[in-house]
Length: 180
Ligand SMILES: CC(C)(COP(=O)(O)OP(=O)(O)OC[C@H]1O[C@@H](n2cnc3c(N)ncnc32)[C@H](O)[C@@H]1OP(=O)(O)O)[C@@H](O)C(=O)NCCC(=O)NCCS
Picture 1 (cartoon, rainbow, N blue to C red):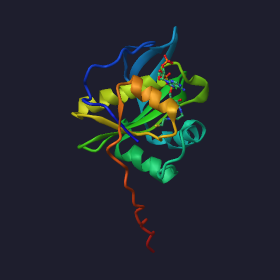
Picture 2 (spheres, protein in one colour):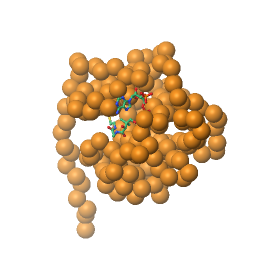
Picture 3 (cartoon, helix red, strand yellow):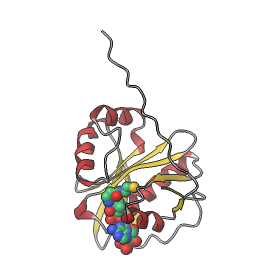
């Protein structure tokens, strides 16, 4: 199922227990809950291994690009699309806010199991929307498993709605073989 925001900068639902409290050189600072602070920063090339480990433990399912080549390619191509939530330097959440110059796509939204229901998923979606808006995006799209009601709830609270008129069509691509 596709979830979309229409329009990207339309009236946002209340943020609830999350508040942005400032910016640092490394990213936006948020207060989540009563007193715990969470930093959201862009990805770096040396995050690839940690991202793969994190997704193995926290993400919903696997991606066709979940290997060191796939993640490294993304981090080289657009490191700012990889948003990482950290608490005390520990990765506790991620989202990929992909912008291809035409559309805004969300991938790999995940929060560590022991940090859920503290507003971190919502903070990541808000950070993704902020990136898209700054780049001139007009609508954010997310592909969400029909059998993932937790994610449906989160997306709805962040202003997304399902768009049942579209279906994903896929075709695996041939992989280039190394020469020589
Ligand atoms: C889905 C997921 C990202 C939510 O992250 P989170 O940090 O727990 O979400 P938040 O705390 O920001 O939740 C914000 C709101 O979304 C809704 N929500 C989030 N998780 C929910 C759940 N399990 N059940 C019901 N509502 C939920 C609630 O309205 C919540 O507000 P509340 O806590 O005040 O009631 C997290 O459960 C996760 O990582 N799941 C596994 C990976 C996954 O499914 N990713 C989505 C792929 S499309």
